[in-house]
Length: 380
Image (cartoon, rainbow, N blue to C red):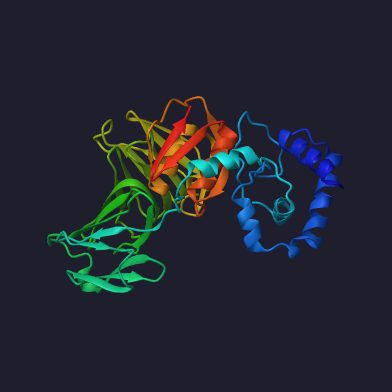
């Protein structure tokens, strides 16, 4: 099949008008290319070309049409072959030229960065600290372990002691940062960018209580008759042992709690001072807005994509997408504008530089960006 025919079929595939026979032809061509051509293309060359090529294959095999679709997906080897051979779907030389002119200095993605604030107020930069013991507090050792993680460990006598004044630590991630910490009870917490968690050095009494701002994913260690409580500015979550994600950024319209395993009770702290709440089940999420709590089915992959190294958007409004980008790349949007009616879908790795993400948005959303230092301006 020649290049022109391939382009025609790919365009029809993107538009959702490809027949079953044509899809079979395209599939067989993919297979033949992946077997015969891929070995001749270097990985570095492929990555270089990927930085400026945007392709429109759907995330799955089902053909769906959307008014606007951000199609940056984890592509198959066959799609990589197409790109390596110069066959692109959303490639626009004009856009690429403008993008290179507008971005003077590119911005790398975020990474493992956080500040640990000890009970005495001492601050430790966790991305700069060497692996090993960082502090001793009430018989508990704070240790930075491999892969940029933090853990707490103490002897049994130091844990669960009632009547003692508890000491608290806080970890906060800056914009462009994320971090993983194992709390004194064995609960594992992943913090997203621009987030913080406050927790006791020792969990004592009949409850385990932490305070969250921003977004975090929890794998709670099960302790019988000792509930784990996550408090944020607008709600309280009560659990025994479970996996869930909480998005409680102050500049987001919803507090969103997504449950993967177990069961949790979500209590809006303003409208339910008595402690009555709503139980959510695995695969569900609660949305709290203006003290009104609703429960709906959740797209689990999308909600925890940040933890797995991706952005995933499913008919997401443009301003929400921009807020996520600003937090991860530590940039400021100078003129947010009004894009209430603009929604995008797609997937992109959080390991890519900001220029790649902005170029994709330019192509799909029909907007133009100017990046100067750490400021993004939308050009009308």
